[in-house]
Amino acid sequence: MASPVLVWFREDLRLGDNPALAAAIATGAPLVPFFILDEQSDGMRPLGGASRWWLHHSLVSLREDLRQRGADLLVLRGAARMIVERLVGALSPQAVVWNRRYEAAGIAIDSDVKSDLKAAGVHAESHNGALLYEPWTVKSGAGNPMKVFTPFWKAAQATGAPTAPLRTPTEIPGASVDASAIGGLEISDLALLPTHPDWAGGLRETWTPGEAGAQARLRFFVADELKGYGDGRNRPDQAHTSRLSPFLRFGEISPRQIWATATKAVETGRSKAPASDLTKLKSELGWREFAYHLLFHNPDLARTNFQRKFDSFPWRSHAGELEAWKRGRTGYPVVDAGMRQLWRTGWMHNRVRMITASFLIKHLLIDWREGEAWFWDTLVDADPANNAASWQWVAGSGADAAPYFRIFNPILQGERFDPDGAYVRRFVPELAKMPASHIHAPWTAPAAMLASAGIRLGETYPSPIVPHDEARARALAALASISDAH
Ligand code: FAD
Image (cartoon, rainbow, N blue to C red):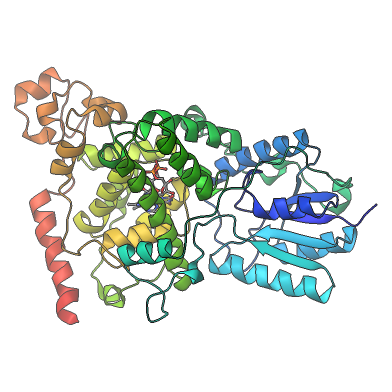
């Protein structure tokens, strides 16, 4: 048998626009696609529960897609460096190829694997499968990493338009491999799905993980929802965002594919969206690029304040209030709707992510890292760059952060972005009968209105765990204390 090429799938669980896979196919050699669940290597952050659920289904879908084209997916578990060494010993490949990742632990493993392969005389090759602009390609005029989004995005685009996505291969020549002899597992052996209890019902109802699901979502979004994206993307009660984030997180779709499909649809008139909606979508993809730029240059982004003056921030520790926030029982309807949407579906609308994060940090003065960790565990799109960068952005501790004194008023935010209360009613059913006039502040409703909506505050729905005005004053004082100190 000709010496095979090993294709290492990681956060690129797709066949289309997959440069590593395309390069492997171009060699003409038989291929061994493989995936390693690595929870052992130093610094690897274990996936959260919702991500594990997603990953299971995404792997099932990838394996099926590979099988339909003549290959298979070898599934393994353990420290990646050791496993690759074992595969090389058993299969004597001519090359190992993969698409790059950008968080510190992954980079360290990949560079060790690359040196091992070189020492063993095996060709190693890495590609860009995840980003429009890799972090080191965008620099300030002085040649430094960028810290502010707008100049970053301008500089990134000035390096050239994203390249066109690669086609999906129709045939993939698989090598025949005795999987069980080299530690091959069933996907179910990875035990990624929740069992006792099975809390994934809401996820199953909401999502179809996998490349086909991603492409279907993209087509629908571009045809029906992109028009009006510029304003509509702020409305959690409307369907104007792509909901492609978990697919992007696991690489079931690439940003190049989204960019190219949306651009073509607008240019050909297949989407009725004006150019401004397209530009807005592209700039949101740009925020993802920026988050990866920040993560690459600041590997500890999920743990360390980008602005070190926040190290002396007077965080409160309050288990009861943290729990109320997690469970959507703060008494602020838009906050509670967001937290329950997250718990039930594994996803939350961006506007509401900002409101709920701001509430935890500024109303409760609870450390943003607690929120980052909860999102990490519960989001199907939990992303090492986007999650960390966004939490720091809301906290005001980040690179290009929201002004530290901006404290979202959850009542006004609700009234502005969910004016009829439809979003709240969907996720907080105890408020379903509340009229729109008072749905974002039920404690201000007249007694008769509460009674006819069947609400007993403090019993059927909580009273606010902290009054907004007091919380705001307390947050400003806390923020002033670190500003004064520096
Ligand atoms: P769309 O509006 O359709 O945007 C398309 C794509 O652009 C998204 O899928 C995403 O990849 C990217 N994008 C959009 N908005 C942002 C943004 N503000 N920052 C970075 N990229 C963006 N996004 C994640 O992918 N994973 C996370 O773990 C994550 N955690 C977040 C935590 C907080 C506190 C906040 C405020 C935001 C977080 N975001 C995260 C960013 C954003 O909320 C989501 O990317 C977005 O809601 C995904 O929905 P969508 O795919 O419909 O977005």
